Every structure is written in C-alpha cells, then in structure tokens.
Image (cartoon, rainbow over all chains, first blue to last red; front, side, top):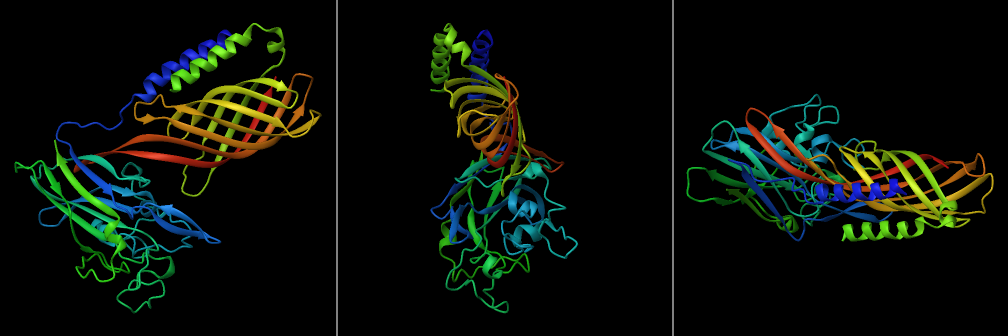
Length: 240
Length: 175
C-alpha cells in the first residue's frame, strides 16, 4: 500500500510538469505563420463500402527569396512528404502539391518531383496536418530582409462538375482520375519585408497549381474551383 | 480535474487498505505489450505496465496501473482497468478488458494525452494465485511533440498532435 501511495504522489508530480508545459514559444527573431481553417478544412475521403473519413488537407509551407528562388521548406504534411497515401495502390499523387514539389527542384528516380517512401522529406519538417488551423515559427538565417512565404493546400477527391472524377486524361481539367485531387491545389503567398513598420502580412491567393501535376506553374483561371477556396480562411505571417 | 480524480482514487484505495478481505482479493499483474500501427499511424509502440487489481467478484476485477510506454516519445501511462472473465475461472479462462487513462510525457519537447485500450484474451492458471495472461486488442494514445528543424538557411518549429491507433498484443503475469 505504501508503494501505491508513492505511485499517486509521483503521478501528481508528473501531472504538474506534463500538463503545464507549453511546447511552442516565441524566440528572438522568429516569424510566425498562422493558418486559420475554413469551413471546408475537413473533407470526406472515401474508404470502402461507402464508409468515409473526414481528412484535413495536404499543406506545404516554404520560403522563396524576392526573385522567386526557392530557399527552404518549413512544413509539409506527412502523406505527401513520405508518400504515405491511403488506398493509393502505387499512385504517386503528383497532382497533390505540384507547385511545392517542383519548387524544391528534387527529381526522383521515376522522373517525378514528389518525395518517395524510400526518400522522404526529413521527419523534422513533416507532421500530420492538424484537424484545425495551426501556427508555427521559423527563423530565416541567411539574412534576407525581403522574402516570400508560400502555402499550397489541397484535398484529395475534391471533385466538381469541371474538375470531374471522370475527366479524360487529355482534358485540361484532368486531375488524376478517381483517386486524384479533383479541384487543383491552391497557392497563397505573403510578401514579407522585415524593414517595414508592419508586423503582420496576410497571404493572398495567387492562383492554382497544375491540375494533373505535370508542371510547377501557377494558373490564375479559377473556373470550376469553389469549395477549395474555403479550405483556408486566412493565412497570416506575423513578426513579433 | 485530473488531480482531484487521482487524489480521490487514492483515498478510496487507502480506505480499503486496512481490510483483510480487501488484501485477499488483490491481484498484481505485470504485463508487456507491443502495438502494430493502423494506417496513418507510425511506429510500433511498446508498453510495460504494473497493475493492481481488486476482485469485485470471482469474474470481475478492477484496478489501476502505471508503467512506461514508448511512442515517438517516452510516455508514463496511468490508467484505470476493468477485466471481466467471460467464463467462470478455470484452467483457461477467456476475458475481455478495457483500460482508460492518461499518459504523461517526461520529455520537455512533448506533452501527454489520453489513452484507451480494449482487448480480449485468455489466462492460464499456474496455481491458485498465479496466472499467465495473453490478449489482443486495440489501443489509442494521444500526445503532442515539438518538432524542430535546423539548416544553414532556416530554423523551423511546430507542434505535431498525434492520435496513435494500433492493434496490440499483450502478455502478462498475474500473481
């Protein structure tokens, strides 16, 4: 019984240390990226026998310099970072986040730019996309005073009448077929100038990625894109 | 709320502690468990626990336990446990069990979260007071961890919230 009372005492002590911990705090020169979820943040993904699962989107966040040259990824969701797709049957899902994939400039053995199971993105940069909006900190270390923060977001099987499940591969609206994206990934960008007085920069939508993932371009024709516009409510980059 | 619940649990057990009948109905179980991650969970969790069980009747036991488990981070689970023998105790006795609790994270870069376990198995009687138990089931563990990336160009930090689902296989020794 003494052992049990000791166990309770240790448990209360552990609770004090574990429950009151704040894992993520601002440090000097940090820049914070906040993503507020929109009403379409969670999307039905079909599993089997009519059973569906609500999935958060795939997201990549990266930095480019003011001339558009890729600097570094600061966050990418786990499925695309590790080729960990559910029910993909070997489909590499190159249409998921093609702008980010091409920006990195890393081409894999099969000629595609998406990370593979064998060569995933480093674990420290990847995480399961939260089921609500989230924030993160980064610090740019090369001394850039002006840079861009880009965010690309995409849901799987997010079909519309235009980006249809049965669109022909030759169609400009083909997005990977029945296991593909449906509506293409959307790209948001915030121009950050550290020399400005402003301490907050809101990212704006600059277009969508290639629907079938064949290139890393940005397209401004938004025909057929509706619910995808409501995945994200707002993206804000804040300086302390 | 957690502090109050645990303190109350401790007091209740202390009240019973002085009863001879209570001591006779106590059982201790040491068990080891390994998990097989379900889709969208990663890594094979392992758990080593000690439970103190009280026999409410010959077929129903309840108790509390503590131990150490390993996910991406090391966690210290504390839990309440319920075990019901499907048949009357005999040489091989099938049972079902349920476990609910909270795991604490000693690491400064992680916080703990709730855990849940369900299982069914069988126990083999070695003697009047000793049994070997084996069970399979499902377990869920929620926790958060800080991820930090550093390169010559960038330093990034974010908190990853993980809900880990796994099928588990457990072996235990009850005495």
